[in-house]
Length: 136
Image 1 (cartoon, rainbow, N blue to C red):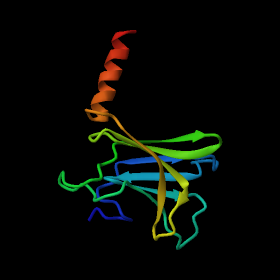
Image 2 (image 1 turned 180 degrees about the vertical axis):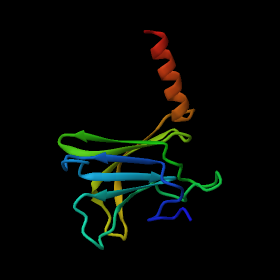
Image 3 (image 1 turned 30 degrees about the vertical axis):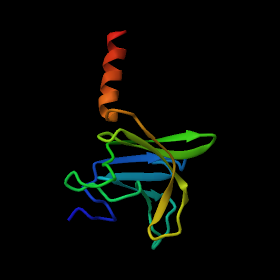
Image 4 (image 1 turned 90 degrees about the vertical axis):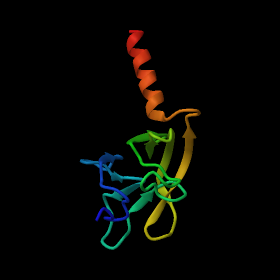
């Protein structure tokens, strides 16, 4: 019942990005270990762009792909990219919506993946934010 368009869990985040005018050039929706990106100018019958990490989806705490807990659009050197965080696993991934496979649906290229060593990213962020608020 949750597998709409390839999601492995209910959609819990939606973000517009890019310079495509009102609403942006892209719409990204995250559900579990999958993010789907739809381009504003997507023609009928064309597939969305899938962002996920290699491996099996995490279901019932089993799998090698963690669930995305945050995402945001960024721009570098005039190019749009999507940053997605797996909070429990402590990994951050940068996806390029313009570089993707020829599969159906298209699969976005991961430009970079970074892991916070020794603890989950959500724990690291809470420690970081509490120390910055106590120093002000």
